[in-house]
Image 1 (tube, rainbow, N blue to C red):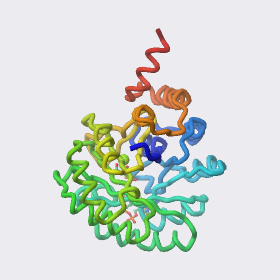
Image 2 (image 1 turned 30 degrees about the vertical axis):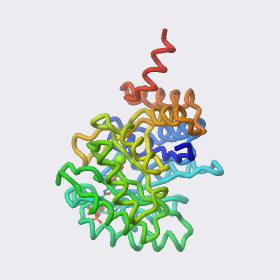
Image 3 (image 1 turned 180 degrees about the vertical axis):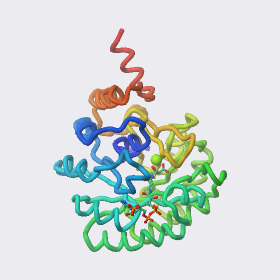
Length: 300
Ligand code: HMG
Ligand code: MG
């Protein structure tokens, strides 16, 4: 259990993509710089998607260019197709993420095509990225339930994860997009997918809608998974996943891991400061329990 865990901080992308108040490029860059200072080494900073679909992520090229100067750090961006890939490459992206779904309903709502069509859209992206020396991460959404189709079978998730892995994604992140999973289901899912993709190459991307994310992560760690996606302050959500709330909070993940003797390299005080700053800007308190506890103990 004490093997190192890699955290992928998704706050600046997943965290902000569904916010009502638009966050300026300057504020997004400041948030990312604060996360860098806190010791987060892999940060998803934006998306090259349709501005009509996600206006919050407009000018992700400017954000990427502004932060992409820290040696040894990875700044990830989402790309849904070749158009997005070209723009990401032009902005200097070194890691892009393609995003598929295990369910047809979410695929159609989110990226306006079937699961099979999405995979064929990603094929040229992955091929070009390989030739360009750009790493590609793969996402599979709705791995523990879909807001449109309901129950999702582990075999459906495994089939999509295998396709992304076989095409050359270096890691496949499993999204509980609407946060409905529970630990035994998460465990069974990982066992099914790990038959096709090595468990250490699977990311756990769990939203916390029903308060199960930390428990699900713990089950995943017991299964041998070692990559966790989380968002500072527990920000997050997707406009095409009605009812879903934020990602598991990075502070809560770091607190749990450190408590288990797993070193994260993250400075909690600086991370809490980053969360407080973005929360003030958004005008709402962080949902992270750890940040709330630290803030409360300071104000005593
Ligand atoms: P479409 O309408 O089928 O695309 O959308 P299209 O090819 O017909 O093009 C329509 C318009 O979009 C055209 O512009 C294109 O140029 C433009 P127009 O002629 O109308 O002015 N367009 C683009 N513009 C900028 N960048 C691009 C791009 N592609 C086309 N890359 C499309 C299909 C995929 C583009 C659209 O549905 C889209 O952008 N969807 C993105 C949705 C999204 O970002 N969702 C959130 C991220 S996924 C998520 O949050 C889940 C995750 O966190 C994991 C989890 O929690 O499970 C990752
Ligand atoms: Mg997500």
